[in-house]
Length: 294
Image (cartoon, rainbow, N blue to C red):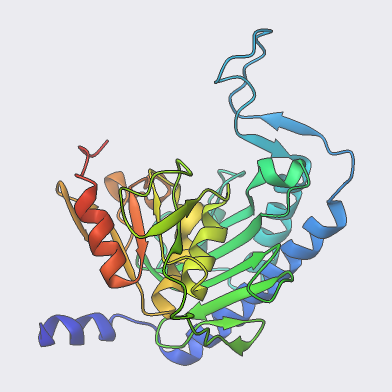
């Protein structure tokens, strides 16, 4: 175990590099947040990824909305990142382009310009802009602009491996009230607690839920099969808060160390996740038998 730990630490970039990357991640997360705030409430052009134009109101009709802001913000983020770190790869939700044809670069930025678009276009104030940086597939830096927070205002949760979680450059040290006997958990169904001593919530944004777990507002959260841009930034925050992250590997729940996509393409990664404090993650993963990997 000691040899494995030493090898993992030696694989990390130096802290000076991580600090520079974190500053850039915070900068572009704030840029995204400013664009989102400026656009909120406007008459936006909206498309639906389901591409269903059926007249009948079926469950599949008009799912996965994308606003004009999603695309515009991602273009801005890509340009700013490429200007500062031209050798880094970028994965985004709205644009398939991989700059410089570098799908196997050492550093990869995974960006979601608006996570929680359905909330955003309806003016429901639970949405985020997520910036995650991976080093050889491992989350090392995260910056998530959230429309609301533990401070009851918009701001950026950010962190890097080996350093504590911050909110707008101030370290977070939230204390859990011991009088609260039923804490909260994020669940995609919004109402399944499997008999555990917590109440479940569905926010509509994986990035928000990751940030809220990291900040201690949610004790635990699970995600069925998120995309990498939904959670890359948030998982860096969760790890900065020294919490657990589990996914399915070889038919078993196991600690997630790094993203491994089919044929080495991490853009195609989609796996179940459970995040939170160690006892809650252990309880929840024990109650959810792993499904066969897709």
